[in-house]
Amino acid sequence: MNTKQMKEQIRKSADEIESGVAAAATRLGNGAEALDERREELQDTLRDFGQRLLDNSKQLSDEIAKQARLRPLAVFGVAFVAGIFVARALRR
Image (tube, rainbow, N blue to C red):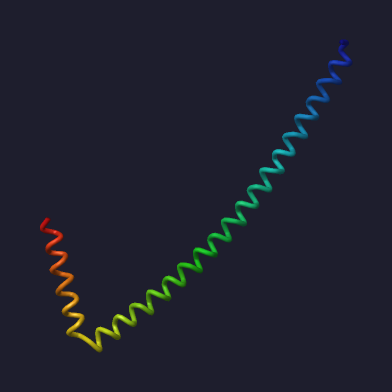
């Protein structure tokens, strides 16, 4: 093999490597964009879920307050029994 053929072979190999690196960079870029889009979708989904959870907890809190106003003795009884259970659990 002469020098000219060697240079041509090296040039071909360098071009193949360069095109392979460019293709890999393109795939990585596309993958990063897809991951970013998925992250944004998940963030929106979690934000919506958190808002629904907050709304439901506010409704539950309002209902508990309403029941406490309507039945104060029942609330006292429940709190008393819960206190007994906690005291017994802490003794063990």
